[in-house]
Image 1 (tube, rainbow, N blue to C red):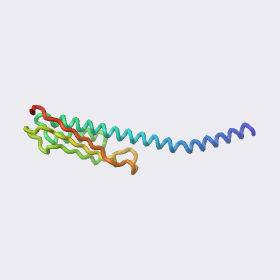
Image 2: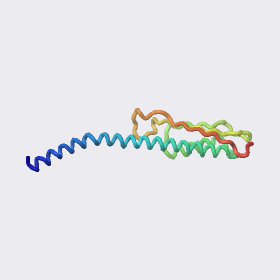
Image 3: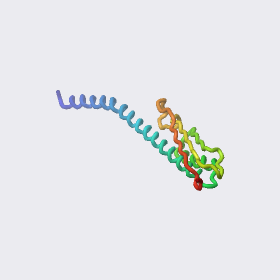
Image 4: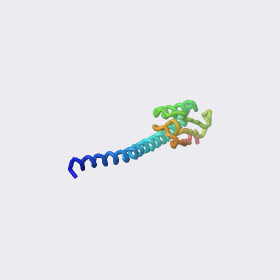
Length: 133
């Protein structure tokens, strides 16, 4: 066998190996991107409920301001179909606790629009209001 023929056979084998490995490699990359996106959404939801609850526990705060704070943080990622709930609906002087709940559906908020990315990331936080005994 000549060296030229051996090189051509080796190039053909490398091409077949490449064709087998590349789709698997892309699958791992896309899976890693999706897991990182889910983690980023989860941490942003954690931050949104914390910051919103802090806003709501201050004297003079309203439920609308509290919800706006959470939505502002969540909108920084461009998330869609986000649900924000502030309890109680009306924060008064005698309100003892403020609870903020955020629900982010994964469908429509992932990088890759595939069917296996489903479910919802839900975060909730309750804080005592300042000045309440």
